[in-house]
Picture 1 (spheres, rainbow, N blue to C red):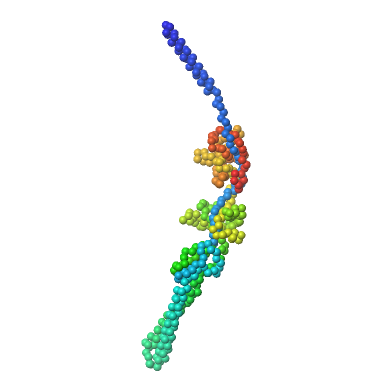
Picture 2: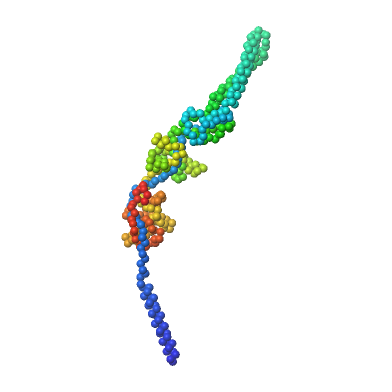
Length: 373
């Protein structure tokens, strides 16, 4: 009997112990967890401003007119006095063919001309004699016509020889290659000593007159970029000194080799001192309407879409989707999703989660439309 009582007692003691432990656990869980420290962030107050997208094109200065220079006759190139990059003036002697061969050709044509002239004189005398004898019956019609045909043939050969002689004289006179205008030599595909054909390009001359800036554009053209539109230009060495050019030509189709559209801009007279090959930049401005300018660090993602962290009155953050009109260097232009006066996280949003308490350490100034945040 005493053994049974001891078992009951032990059961009661076990129940009391379990209930005590449960009460202890419930009491501990009822206590509120310690509040997490607010994350310090840098904020920016939203302000709608007039959006002005800046598009920068990079190109170089090229000559509008390029002459391909060649000798009018074949011959051996005896001399080329210029090389690529040399500046020349109109009328300057740039190269010369070997005159010995040309003079030999001229002498040969003169000898041929004299021989044919003697043949013509002989044929003319024969024809005159047959013309006198035919009415008197001392010759026949066949001999007369033979003399007449011989004279015409000799005269035709003389005319051909005269033309060849004139060509030989012109070739000797044109043995010097002259510059057509002031400019710069941009190509020299032939070296001294080579034999060239008539019309074969020997030098390429870029004229100093009317240089232009040339750009290759990979994207669709901005709406304001049309023929005749003004465009601001500057060299990379002098970015603060801008001049205004004018779009002269836009290629009608994309280049098959580069996949770009070529844009040619006429330069004003004040830019004509820029050497050929000078690297220039063109700045295009495009109005976007009211936008919010935020730094790149303010941009986050919500299910693959652009979003920003917005701070409410209780200093808690929520992820808000936005529409980005343009991504630029160091900043993004937002057109929808935010209202004037909203406070958003500009820096420090990498570790945030919805509803998190934040502490604003600093508020950035509103960016200007044309500047960087």
